[in-house]
Length: 305
Image (cartoon, rainbow, N blue to C red):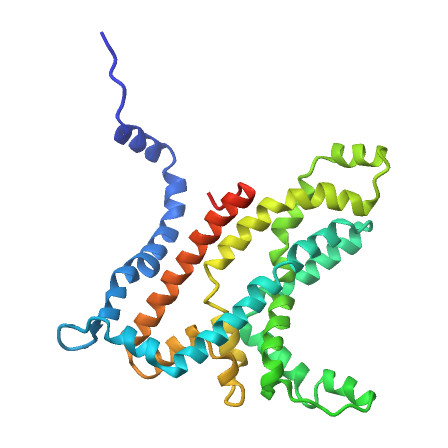
């Protein structure tokens, strides 16, 4: 008697019965993404409607997009977002693999482990706590100005100085993320075969040459992948960070799209305009990821997929 091959549905159901515990553990994550990621996509249509809490939404067409692109304030906010994102996602990016390389070159294991723990800890602090530390550190009576006073320099209130506040965001982001974001590069270095180092040592290669010809080529793939993925969040620029560091004196220099969406959406109740801004931001992020992926594929042969 000829046996019939099971269908894909039957095979899937059998695997589901066998691994039901794993799927049960995955269920809360799926529910979270469906509620907070998938369903909101459908409600992005609010960008094309006039919102009403008591009656049906009425069609508005491109009204809110015209308001957004025609506003001088939007141009200033977009410029702030691009500058801050460039500093955080491009200028800061090389320091993560560099820090991983420096960690791997430490000969004392105890010192390396201590450095790792210390560098990882800030990642687990909320931006409320981090902002409190940095505001205290950079105030007129803080540690930085006390050091400046020793050299006879005039105190600077960095938190209200428009020329300094973006660099405060840059360095506080680096302090928080340096250790954590270097983990993927550090594990990549640890996975390199010791035989490569032994062969290079026999050939008389220096430590610098080993890093250049063994370590750096191994880091290319994770660096390209992480850079492309980060570009998807290029217009985010760090809502939590900016919200905690902003004040009336510097708001015009660091107000970004996310804080603007929060202000007009939650603060002023302009839900349709806020949705339009969020929609443009999301579409632009997807376009950046696709463009960078295609470019990387052509130049290096490596992309996200």
